[in-house]
Image (cartoon, rainbow, N blue to C red):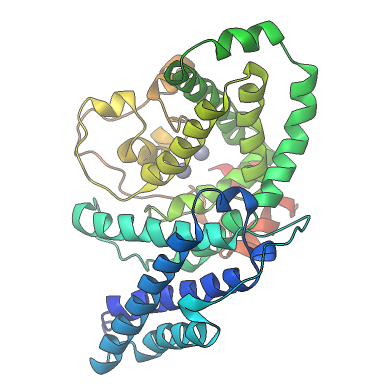
Length: 369
Ligand SMILES: [Zn+2]
Ligand SMILES: [Zn+2]
């Protein structure tokens, strides 16, 4: 029996209802649930307007799905979440001044980031997708779990990354080099920072592919069977900390100015999502200058000729220098299948995937191909 078609309105309502509820909780406990760093980027008025839009859309789309008798239970999650959000204060929710706490979660970063990513990429992939896949393809729950973890734990990741890099960077400080770099215009610093960061990332990425115990962590990222904007979130916590440290270290040692580093951080956030997105747009020669979906999709290909190529996430130039550049010249050549060669070596679900690298018993070659 064919599965009944899922209602877009019901699922969109559920997403917005739950995000609205989380947003109201952020207003109630800003010192615990919102991150100081991200709060500096938006203001209260913006958050209240966004909440209003989320609540209205959750009610509207949920009601529509219920009236049309489609995925009613899912739609009820949306309407129920939005109702609870209103009962807890809705857009008028008051909060006292934000107290100081040593640790806080980045729930605001998760809510706002997921909202805008879905808003941009769900329609883009629907109309311009290379493959026709639903946003609710197999494994989407796992990947939302990863998206949640990497955003909500942002401060803890930052603490671990800073702790591991600042000591080494302090030992390897070259004031003259730093002065020379900071005398350059910001755009030039930004270009150098992107190249240096990508080179560091690509070298570590090659190590993930070639060193047995590192591959176990990275295999999790390669276990996605479908590629879309959300699939790139599937990264083992250890890999997140290791990669961010490896990238930050040369940036600290070279001493780029804050605007150049901030511009780099924005770029890496956007390009990492874009590179995994299911977008069949033809970019022509641009594919040789910038890492775009087809480039990184070949990195994820379940194809023996493409196991260890295309490590860069910003500039194909980095792979050309490392001798690991490989892209079929025809724009219509895309991988037929994604995932690790031995599918059974990576379990399903975020928890089991996190435990997998620590579980011995299997030989390395069982994990590789
Ligand atoms: Zn890889
Ligand atoms: Zn990837």
